[in-house]
Image 1: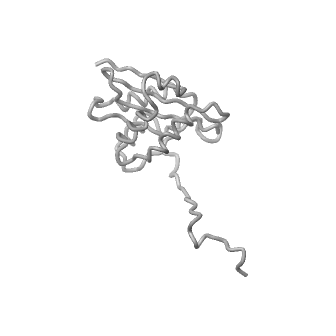
Image 2: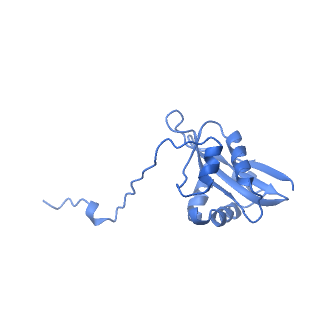
Image 3: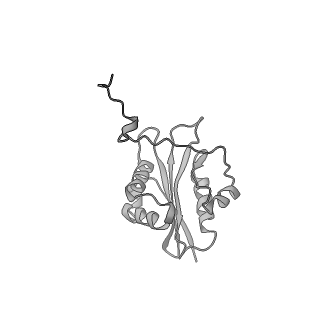
Length: 162
């Protein structure tokens, strides 16, 4: 079957082929246990299409036999030099319709298309981690996050207390 890759930089380009909601739905379905809520996926796509300084990126579509089988969303970080130039926000393939190796080929195309270094986040138990390592991604350090919860009473400062 014929593979086709389409790199999209604007909403207008995307909608020549698919609606943004179709891409969001594809990613939400195929990211499986690693999925984010649809509004977060849509926000990453909007960021990729933004023309604001420090923003941008692209969406890469993979079709096999005329059917959508893979999607990458890559965002520019705007922090070149001290943080990688790009972050691979989403990559997913339709395992029912994409042959083995389609995800690796999709990622290679995204790597070729991107200008500069690429970072990604992957959970240690994600089977795709081995593919990323085979393609040259390394683990520089563990990412840690502090989630600020403004509703947490313990962390609320009360000016009226003496």
